[in-house]
Length: 182
Image 1 (cartoon, helix red, strand yellow):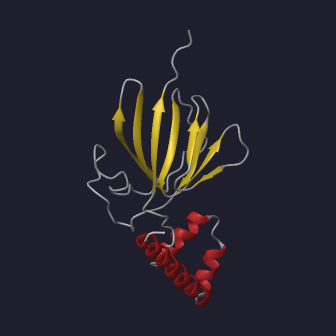
Image 2 (cartoon, rainbow, N blue to C red):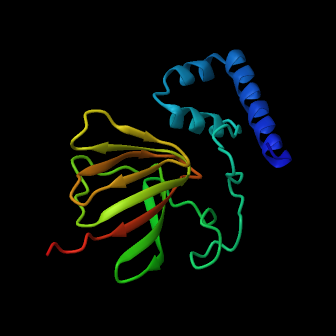
């Protein structure tokens, strides 16, 4: 492990230890932890108390940047986090055959009863954060973490159940259509 990664790991351990110590001393915080239903809620609760425990390898600190942030040549991980419940989509590259998008979502979810039913294939890679997706043909939701990739075939109905709160979830999404059958 490189020294920078070691330092990032040690800082996360320090933050976790401090958050645990506070939760042991504060009954209200301990109860709030009991009421958390998933990892995202625990990370958001810790963040509300000033602890950053959700960073994964290579993620910048909240509000940190890694470059110019423009899709043409800057960092895909920089740029402002959208307001809670919203997404910002930036076309990174487009050709007649395909489109590459950066999607930055913050505490976003599909509206109740809404399902994506796309005419394009979509390959997604989570660059930052985590998300939960539900497919119409699967009984259990899928939990995706930073670094996970997924192929969603055209016509496969799916919906976003949750994306991370600030600094949000950043997706890289490649869209393309299958060639017509001869």
